[in-house]
Structure formats: structure tokens, C-alpha cells
Image (cartoon, rainbow, N blue to C red; front, side, top):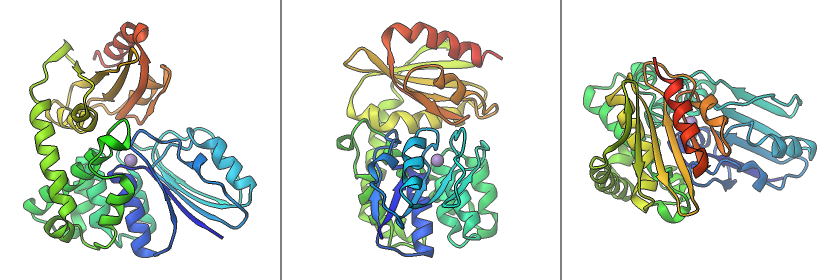
Amino acid sequence: MTYFDVFNGDADGICALHQLRLAQPRQSTLITGVKRDISLLQQVTAQAGDCITVLDISLDKNRDALVNALKQGADVHYVDHHFAGDIPTSPRLHAHINTDANVCTSLLVNDELQGAYLAWAVTAAFGDNLFEAGEAAAQPLNLNETQIKALQHLGILINYNGYGTSLDDLYFPPTALYQAISSYKNPFDFIAQAPAYQVLAQGYSDDMKQAENVNIHRETPNTAILLLPDEAWTRRVSGVYGNLLARQYPNRAHALLTTLADDTYRISVRAPLNNKTGADDLCRQFPTGGGRKAASGINALPAEQLPSFIQAFQQQYQS
Ligand SMILES: [Mn+2]
């Protein structure tokens, strides 16, 4: 019998697993990848009696592998907040899915664990750019302003580490970052003591300085499109920079486009923070698109579809 932990390589995925394994330590096979690598469940070759935990990856994008694992006789605990579509019914599937725009997987896990490791769930909410939900969830911790800011920055840094086209772009493979975090019950100790924290803080600061020099490519009163070169720093920073812009301009929707060598665009969409809707529907209209209501993306938009993407984006958020 094998345990598999399958999790998104971003802050939410890592902090969700971290909470679960603090509560219930287990030797498991870890399966993860860069944030956008979400077809993860197919990497599991399940056998009867195996226990699979799946965190923070869309069920809709993993349904075939899920159905297959259940058919093989594995038990699956699935926690997520992305679009799920039809959820298979099986006595072996324990699905905890909530696509509310103000929850994240780590907050759902926090509910399951009755707040046992709340500070890590709050960290993840900040990582997923859920600043209001994160602060609301943090109430019982009675943190001061400085401590809240520290968890916000930690969430952003762990999330930042997940962005890239391949693992080569990242400072740490997400398994390594999870392992670096796994011995810390308290995120403030991780911040104070872990060398990995210092590495991420420096990398983030360098990348963000470059991002702030990028001009806006197209702008309407409620939308802005930025065009980024395809370099390791843009692959790392585009998602967190999009989150920052969303917080700075809460009434504006943002699309960050990266020109790729094969004549496609990688796109990150952020709905306005004051109107967290539609980003998932918008991106799903295009090949390789998906995500959540507030934050979504397209992995490889063919160049000839760029005008229709821009039109659909501007139309979606025109008012
Ligand atoms: Mn998430």
C-alpha cells in the first residue's frame, strides 16, 4: 500500500499538504511540478488500497486519472477550489471542493483540521492573492500589523517560487521547498531561520524591480495588457506581478502576455479584485486555457488568436 501526495507547486498546494502532514505525518510519494503543471494525477500508478491525497489542482483537468485511480481501488482525498465540473461518485472518493472566489485549498484543509495550523493556511491565502480572506481567517491568531505583513510576504514568496515554464526557471523544485518548510510548525520560524526564505526574498526583489519597468501595451478604463519578453525572470515573476497590479488597481482587469518562441502567447489573467468573476470562463474559451474566477491563464495561445483574446478580454471587463 502506497501513499501519494499530489499537490500544486504553489503556496496554496504546498501549505495545504504541509498542514495535513503536520497533523498526520506519513511517508509518501510526492508528486508536484511548476504551478501551471496541473495534469499531475496521471503520474500516479494506483493499486488497490493505495491512498492518494490531491490538493489544489482542478478535478476537471484530472478527471480521467481520478476515475482510473478509483477504478483501480485506490482511496482518494481531493481538496480543491478550481473549476471541477462533474464530480465522480464513488465511496472511495472523499471530495472537498469549493469554488467560492474567497476560499483556497489551504483554507479548506484548515477547516478539515479545525484550525490546527491556521498560520500556514493564512500564508497560503495571501499567496493566492486572497488578502481580505487571509486577514479575516487570521483573526483568531491576534497578529499585529507587522506579523500580518510578514505572512503576506511569505505567501507571495512561496507562490512566486512556483511560476516558471519548467523547473529550471524556479529557485527550488516545489518538492524541495515543501521539504524545507515541512519541519516548521510555525511560519515565523521559517521566516527567521530558513536559508530558503532568504533566497526567495532576494530573487523576488530582483525580479520585481525588472517587472516594474515594463510598460502597459494596451489600456482601456477597466483593463490593462502587458507584454513581457520570454526570459526566466518574466516566467517567474509574471503571476505575482499580476497579483500586485490587481491589488494596486482593484477596479482594473489585467492580462500579462509573454511572447513564446513557438509563435504562441502564455497569458495570465487577473479579474479586478472588486469584481472577481469570469477569468476562468474567458480563458477556457481558448485552447490550453483554465483557472479560477479571479485568476486564470492560457498556456499557449496561438498568435492568430491574439486579437480575439484581446477583444474577449476587453469585452468581459468593459464595465
Ligand atoms: Mn490555490
